[in-house]
Image (cartoon, rainbow over all chains, first blue to last red):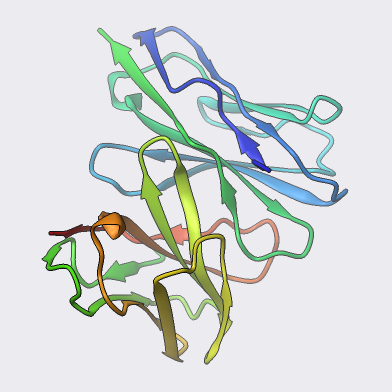
Amino acid sequence: AQKITQTQPGMFVQEKEAVTLDCTYDTSDQSYGLFWYKQPSSGEMIFLIYQGSYDEQNATEGRYSLNFQKARKSANLVISASQLGDSAMYFCAMREGGEYKLSFGAGTTVTVRA
Amino acid sequence: DVKVTQSSRYLVKRTGEKVFLECVQDMDHENMFWYRQDPGLGLRLIYFSYDVKMKEKGDIPEGYSVSREKKERFSLILESASTNQTSMYLCASSPVLPRDTIYFGEGSWLTVV
């Protein structure tokens, strides 16, 4: 079964607007971590933000925030004030319990229009 | 800054060739990973290693093997390359703490013809 689901293959957003990227996850563990990465066309994977399952506050890092809804098992990424440099593929990932590995979703391509 | 270096950025190999993808990290991380990235499928774990000479299969290990003789180096081996192994391969490393991200190399684009 798919552990991470990203249902939006691609999105367009106007510069300076906010965009929300959806991510739902599936785990029976109580302890887990959720990650978001950005992959520009160059191919490098850039870590953006982390949310632990026991964190009471939603994570924020600059223009990135994570809308964590534990009961719905969703961890949506919000990018505020989009910039042209935000055009990239975005991946949601999860680390379960005592595992070392991350499981990734299929990714969402974001294109920011001027 | 953490540095994960993959030896080759672009490779073209023939069907049946033995292919080595090398990865080196400079942060003394215990864990190292090989992922494969394909459009619409995201990243899928091939193998990972949590210590020298230790390895575990990921989600898609068939057709691949790995080697970790030194802590900083993790090699992915395609014993007999096939066209369905044409893909982007990403090496990564991480420390052991659960909140820590994993750090990726720049990726190796492999084409098997």
